[in-house]
Length: 284
Image (cartoon, rainbow, N blue to C red; front, side, top):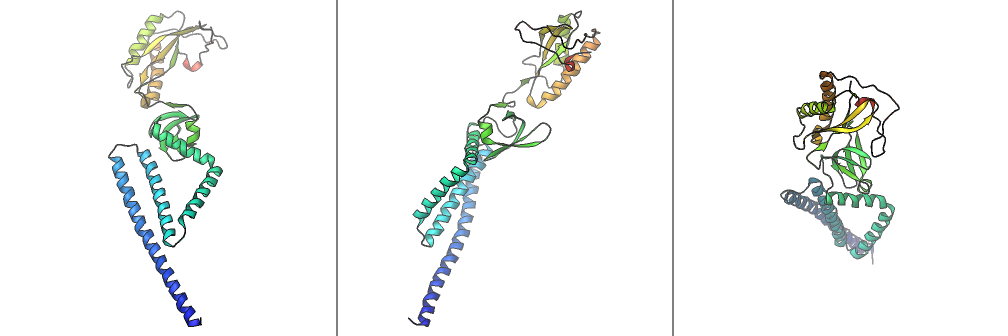
């Protein structure tokens, strides 16, 4: 075979390879557009079903990755590469990556369970994995929680799913727990009636259930009242602080004597557990 013939064969091979490359690029561009169009259709269809937005993003990511893997395998087959060997190689790589990134995959699986079982959603105020705050995003591997002091905390999904979860936004109301110290000479029935009437007037305190004001325990200063109004979680701290003000103002207007503060001493309640009243809970 002389050089002109070799050149012709090489040119034919390069032309054929070049056409395949151009065809592969065209296939990639067209397929990418089709995948994006398919993702938009799926997103639109899922939104009409009133599905959780986080779950929609989760499913769309899985569909997008799967379609692109199929596209890559198709392009390799277009070049004549044995795709069954590639699939086996991909599976082996997946096993190796799974072994190396076991924790990451565990977070991925935990994220899927969080979205499916929905113990909380974006906007809920929760305590999970030792973090208390408002859920700002539920991701594939982590959940973003903004704490009350406005600090963004990123928590691994597996840590959340493996721990106890408290959702303060799940129920229509929650209880505010406060204490009010009385002097021994104060008529506790009158104090309870005055407090109930005053607390019921606090904005955002729900009427049903009505606020609870009862004697909780006794100490050397006198009876200790449990003051428990109910409110929606969004108004918790407003009701908490307003109730503290109501206790002080109610007792002051009634002219109740100031309880003697004797630090280091407390009378145990009937169940045998000690009850030390903090100075912040004492009325003046």
